[in-house]
Image: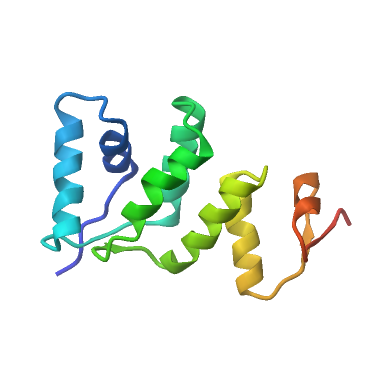
Length: 135
């Protein structure tokens, strides 16, 4: 049987606890995952959308986002390809000016042993071991 897909709004309603009907439902879903009675799939885009919404719409700090979201992603019942790399992504996200997607790109590049990036984004210049080029 195929696993259900866990969407962004489940993470958001659980983390924000801002909806009288949906927040308790989201928390119940994540509790079932934590207890091992439910297994789900999710995607990088769900993680990115959750981080983006928490940071931009709700003005949450990077630290708060990392502290709240990363432990949920680590739950064994959440199937997320490449999830073991999110520890590094969130560490870089906490400690650098890079946006979340750029942190993900840096970790991916490191994993692939790539040292050169073509980008106009000068924030990449601050990443040790990475050479940014514009042409």
